[in-house]
Length: 385
Image (cartoon, rainbow, N blue to C red; front, side, top):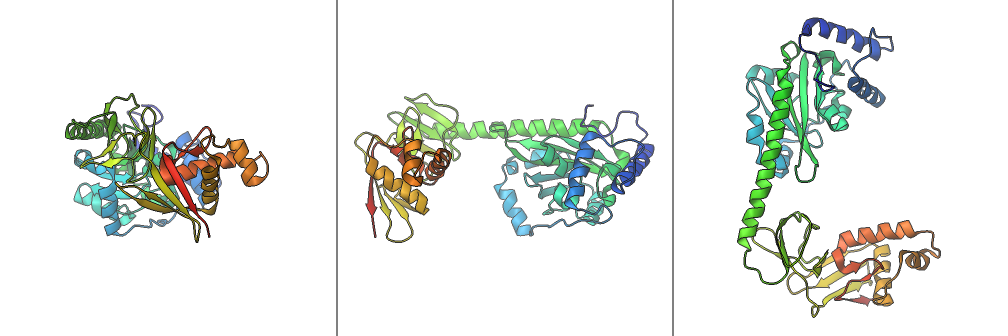
């Protein structure tokens, strides 16, 4: 069963629970246990002891208000597949958390729900190691791996009557962790098949997430099938649904209204809103993106675009960099040269690169790199005090 499993097939669960309680008590009172806990559990206990949590009481759950739970549910990508996940709760207590360990959904038999209420194991609770000690959900978040805990492997004594089997759910496109699926029940009812149930359920859910993604891109592709010229059709996050006249990767930067976007093969683009997603195509050699940097008070950059004019505040450092780029012309500045201008020496190249990166996140591809300069087609005026 591997490191994931808390017990081996054929284990006497009652005897094993008693042995774990003796190990738990010895370790947490500074004694010498008869044998060491599993490596996973030992790592977690060490982290939790370092946080100063008390195993003898229920530590703070810090529940969020229910209206916030509802908002988190709406925003969670897991909302697309939650019905499939909740079907796993056939006789079990099942919870689904977000990537921060906040319990968003919970279903199960009435008796188990009532017992879970007594632990604070309810919607809105933060079920992390920092909040409630070693537990399958919180430890799975830290370890970024499936975790099963049995009885006194939990840090809090109140949780010793339980087993918990937790499995992370990942975005199949990016690998990003979206949350945790956890099945819990009375410790002495733990069965080896439970870990198989949870892991297979999560794999099916991730496959369903991929199908939702593919279906959405297909709808977007059909909705914009007759756009002329080189272009991309992308979703809200920059995933490419269709490409014409350009070879591209599966994803570009996420478009934002009115914000210039640099796309390999297309150059400088101003994304255009579609009913679903975005049309991304070159601004064109005859198109000039006019921008004004106003320095009369706190720096503000205003971009004049017929499609979607926009303005954004800038830090004084970013305003200083833009002013430099407006005066240095198309030849631009190397990171070393900009370091000398800004700091008086060439020792701040890393700082310059970090500032340019932050500036580009704020204003898009108005600034080009290698060397640093205003992008082709960008005209910047500076209004000084």
